[in-house]
Image (cartoon, rainbow, N blue to C red):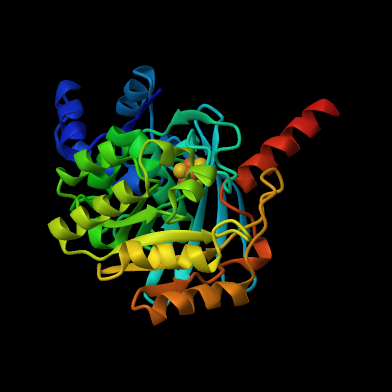
Length: 354
Ligand code: SF4
């Protein structure tokens, strides 16, 4: 499977030159691809060129919207994206005053197996290519009535299924593609990359000079607790993650975000808040507290919202900036990875009853 959306404008031009086509064909194709059109819909591209691309195994975008759910409360849209090989990933479009933020997936499943997350329940199935990750943005942009010239997605967060830095090459290429001047041109400042703390890959990423907002999934500031809920902590412990965040700030001067999902009786006690304060106090960061989405298979209980505000208050009192994340699309609730899991279960049940 080869996707045209995997190619940069230069690569598309090289392909057109190799086909003996004028280079403006690349721009024509690019406009169509970024509008989310398949080959049949590309009415201004000649049949012989399309036939040749198809014969050479190329697909246009490779991502389609299989299902979507719209919140009646705030207009949030949850997507199930279908990939060309039948795999499924999730995305969420959230509407804010400043624009539309799309949360996207970078892998089918995840091998990090965090104890509170549905995405890692069945391990990693495969990485998404750069063009597939981009395809999620293109598909959601089209869904909302946008195209390349009239962009409806203004912000992107890499926080759906998968650990972005575990799919390093594709994610870095995606970031360059989505930021490209002739592409959707989404500013790095409007992109957030979340990592559970793969520090070796992070140090490599630091050298790329791609100044996105870095979000570190911390979820506990004591190693014994973090190792219990995040297996990655056995290799890259709390101090290594916080040191990495500091290196990012030193290099980019961009305030980093620590994600902290509050789990009742696990990481929400006074000693947990105290440990977190000790580790991050005095460093320009923000702690984003998340009231856990219940995942049946995981069985962990959420801290109440009231307790989450108490936890945030303890941090603020000690001079550490903290927010409690707003719940978006509460009426179509489902933790990351759950929609996909439910869809797969449903498909199996339907198959069995045939
Ligand atoms: S929280 Fe992120 S890194 Fe952990 S299992 Fe889920 S998707 Fe993977």
